[in-house]
Amino acid sequence: MASKLQTMEEPRDVAQHFLVRHRQILLPLLHVGIFSATYLSAFLLRFDFNIPSTFVVSIKATLPAVVMIKLIVFAISGQLSGWWRTLAFRDLLGVSLASVLSLATLGAAAYFSNSITVPQSVLVLDALLTLLFIGGLRSSIRTFAEFVQPVLATNRYKRAALLGTDEETIFLASQIQSHGRLSLNVCGLISISPQKRNKHLPSGLAILGNLRELRNVIQDSRIETLLVHTEILDGRDMRWVMDECNALGTQLQIVPRFEDRMHGKGKIPTREIRIDDLLRRDEAKLDLQSIAEIVSGKCVLVTGAGGSIGSEICRQLIRFEPKQLILLGRGENRIYHIEQELRHQVTATKLEPVIADIRDAHTIQAVFEQYRPDCVFHAAAHKHVPLMERSIREAIVNNVVGTRTVCDAADRFGVSRFVMISSDKAVHPTSVMGASKRAAEMYVQCISRRSSTRFMTVRFGNVLGSAGSVVPLFKRQIAEGGPITVTDARMTRFFMTIPEASQLVLQASTLGKGGDLFVLDMGSPIRIVDLAKDMIRLSGLPENAIEIVFTGVRPGEKMHEELADDDGMISPTSHPKIMSIQPVPVDEVAFKEAVKKMLEYEGDPSLVRQKLLRIDEVRFADSKFEKIHS
Image (cartoon, rainbow, N blue to C red):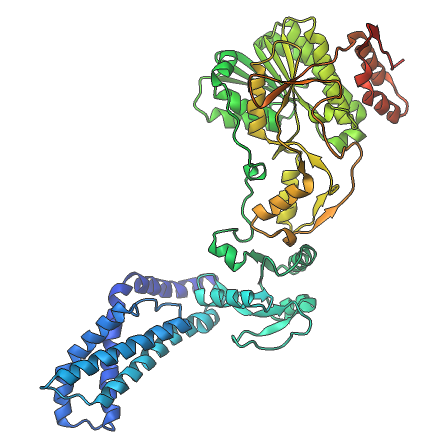
């Protein structure tokens, strides 16, 4: 049946295409026929359909001139175009003006002509008939497009309704109905006011019901598509409407306001969010020469190469054409994807994907022995704060012991530079994740004092767009109609983009002398709720279109993050976006003993958590060891 309907529609589509394509020729010919018909009709009406023979001669003599004058007047006034679908009051005014101008021109020509006589009443009748014929024909074309064609081709037009009875919605409904190519047949409007129902508006659109009756209206009127412009409902009501439409299988389309459409803002339903829009910071300028000196032609190993940061570091490194790039990670799918992505780039770099766990000392040693990397970027780590609160031992084994394993291998095999990726959550840690990263920083400081390898740590805040950041979560929640879940209205975070952080990590690797702790300039802290509102607006919606729900601070989370400890002095470096922090000396013996006891402890996990959060106290104090994990 569908194929039969399709074959029936094809000739009409071909004909419509032909008419549109050749309208520059067809429209003047059509007007010639109309002008001829109106002129003859005017004589017939003037003489009661019995034209005297003397005036028959006048008709033959004047018809070509009359038609030509009217064509010129209509062409100059712009009334030979715009026939196919659009007709507004302004168009009728234009036709009326062209008819009056034609009447005036023909009247003047008849007045100054001595050889041919045309009654003035004929000219007046001709003007009125021209307005009637052309206006009526153009009205019939629009009427056919809006009302008849959707009925004749029901398989091509979805039954649609619009939410609201305001001027914006009525105007939008008229636009959709007159446009025709949107394949929507507007059946009526749904009022958001319970008082308005079962009425007709002056525009001819019916009010099918009100918002409280939405489910019944959709079912009774067989609505397939519901359109809502962005500012008619608040976030809570918009989400309820979306749930109702999903339950009934009705498509919901969110349409920008007329002002936004005129200025090119927004799309239907939303536009893709660009991560850079959320920060509006200048791009970091890199010293490419210094990076190339330590990377180009060298063997570079990246741990956690399949993660958000690790994979971006690989993308940045490939630009400098290292001799060999080792992509080490535990997740085979992620390593496979970044390997395939990098292989599409034209480069002389040899890619070596390695599936390995940084906690496996034997495997890590074998990897270092086989490839002998010159530089190591250590990005492998567990980073999810709430999950690590439930998996304390896993956080310690992976983030602390895993880092120690990779550091020891780098030291043993004479790696030139070792860069560990840390987090601002390592400052005054209140979470297992933050404390484990602080412990990893401490071990890097310990080994740097006795190794020829230049060990360094780069600390930065949240990265926008990473797998664990709020941006993918917010994007999904916006696409689902909300609500957006934010922990607390006061909570702030430092944010960077993934490329921005990765580029500065490479730059920091050129600055380290050994034992360095770098902090990246992340700008001012941003409130999470402001980030959510920005994402709503960048989606093409007003802030109140999506509801924001506050869920409360989760275990281990801080209200505000910090860049450095109280006793850590921040000083500038040669790069304006990279700062250096004076690390506090750590007692390596006490540190290793504390980690060992935490791993061996089999009692209450909360006690292990307390010890881990106090790991920062294992440091030198007045030339004596402060051992708190006795």
